[in-house]
Every structure is written in structure tokens, then in C-alpha cells.
Image 1 (cartoon, rainbow, N blue to C red):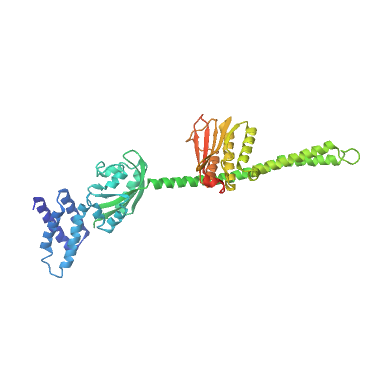
Image 2 (tube, helix red, strand yellow):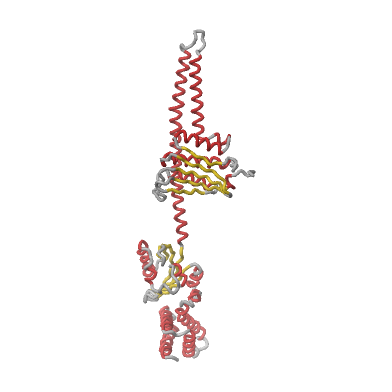
Length: 453
């Protein structure tokens, strides 16, 4: 027996004797500390087994048969606590997790989590290999020092993490916290950390074990969901605003256009009734022609308002003729040339997709007229199996790709929603001074008629 083992044997025998008398937590803490010292002095498990067997010979075997079962059970608990530091070594920490309910719960999470074991009194800590991989390090690169992890915590979260740890150790509140860390490569990642301390009878924490889990992807998904909900909220408010504007526009057209034309028609009819004619009770041809022209203007105005609300040409002639007509009216109204590359026979569009695709092109052209300062637009609608590609490119001023969102961004948001309803997506390409390109990529399965060949 070595000198080190001989010295430890006397302490083990004394500690076990005290524990057999009262089976206190203090006694177990003593066993754990003896185990730590043995491991630091490079004593092995066989040495510990020999030490325990010698203690049993001294303390348990001489006892009465009636006392031996109780003493053996207590001795086993004492010896297991002595072995805990060995179990928590790099080679044995998985076995240690199974030694208690706490360790078992950690083992369940161990496949995805990085484990840590900390002594608050000495500040010694153990990080599992997976813990280090979450931090971006190989097992041999990150030292088992608390600062190795705490130094990587993002400055915005550091105080919150330390306060949560302090509250757990002092007030025994749960240690369950999410925070950001900076990895070896400099990337910022989110982790979820949970831990549980053990306290001795004096209320002093002598050990704390726990895990961290990389939740970066979940955080990104949560943020994307939050932004999506915010966009939908803003879009909903915008839709309500657009509806009110559209009602106001229709009211103005009814009042200013149809109302004035009907008033003029009424005046013309009144004049015709009171004094215009050939003397034989018949109205003259010139007055009738004027009334006919007013009626024609009224019909055109009604058709214009109806077409703005829903383009009837979509139902009568189909999507491509409706877009051709839209492009012609756009060029005439804004003096912006529209160059079209459309094969009318390439895709037989189904009725369900027509209004959505028409509104996307209409909104894109409206944005060109309002914001681009362009003189020319290229409009492509092509088949690229398994997709239909709709592309609108202008030669205007362009915008910064990551610029702030303005009111016109609602148009883009609306187009994205329409594309998503068809199972597609919208892609934007733009730079200041380089024009604006919008591409809608839509699956043919969503836009093509089922019987199309």
C-alpha cells in the first residue's frame, strides 16, 4: 500500500465511522471530497475498492448480524459518493449521470446537450466534449475553467446569467436561462442552460451540475415567426386602409365623373324638352347626338370603374390578353414602354390563379410608375419546367437592397402573399442606379390547367 493510499485509508475509515453513526449529508460530502483528493493524487478505482474492503472488515463485519444489513447499505452509499468524482471524469461521466435521478435526467438530454459539473467552492469545472463543440472548440482546445464559458457570454446577457446563477445558489430558485454566446469562430449562437446545485447541511452549495443546449435555430424560427406576424398585422392594417381609399376613390369617380355626366345629361334633356326642336315637336338631330355622346361617356365611365374593381377581360379572354391590355393602358397612361416576352401558348393558365397573377403584375407595374423613375419595363412570362416565371425589370433608379421599409413595401408584401398562396415565392434584385427586378417563381402544378398538355 502506498503512502498516499495509507493516509487516505485512515481518513476514509474515520469518515465512514462518523457516517455510520448518523448517515448525514455532511458525511456524504466528506466522502465526495475524499474521492476528489484520491483522483487528484492519481489513485485508481481498484485502490478505492481495496480501501473500502478494508473499512468493511474493520467496521461492518464485526457488527452483530442484525446490524450488518443497515451498516452495509450505509457503507455502500458512502462508497458510491466517494466514486462520484471518478464517474464524472471524462471517461466516466455517462455512468455518473445514471447514479441519481438528477444525473439520469441529464443523460436523457446528453445526446444534444453539453454537460458541465462545477464546484462553487474551488471554482473547478468540467465541460463535456459536446459542450466544447457547441462553443466551436475541439475537446483539447477549451480549458476546464469557468471563465472559458463565462467569458464567451454576450455582454447584453452576462448580468442576467450571473444574477440567475446567484439567485439559484443563494435562494435556490430554478437556474433556467437562455442567452447568447460567441463561439471560437466569432459567430453568435443562442443556448439554453439549466442546472441544479447540491447543498450541505449548512446550506452551502458544494456542487452544481447542468447542461447547455444549442437553440439558435429555434430562436431564428421564433424571430422569423414574430416578424411574419408583425408583417401580417401591418398588412392587415394596410388592407383596411386600402379598402377605405378604394371606397373614397370610387365615391369620387361616381360623384365627379358619373355625377357630372348625369347632371349634364339631365340639363341637355331639359333643354331638349323646353325649346329645341324643328317646330313640329321633334328634337333636332344635333341635340340628340349630344345626348347620345353623353350616354356613351357614361357607359365608358361605368366600364372603367368596373374594370378597376375586377377586370372582366380575365373571365372573357383569359390571363395573357388581360395582361396585354393592362400593359397597353400602363404605357398610354405613364409614357413608360413595356417590352413583353410572352408566349401565349406556353402555359394554359387555370381560372383559380388568374386574378392572383394579374394583381401581381398590376402591383409591380404600379410600383414602377410610383417609385422607379423608369422609362422602360421588360415583362417576361415564360415556362421553365417545373415553374412558371414572371419577371418585371425596370431601368429606373433602383433602391438599396437592405434599405428601410416604406409604404410601397406593402405592395411587395402583398405580392409575396399572393405568390405564397400559389405555392411560389418572390425574389428581388436591385441596387441604387441599377434598376429593380422582381421575379415570381410559381409551380406549374398550381397555375396550369389540369387538362393542359
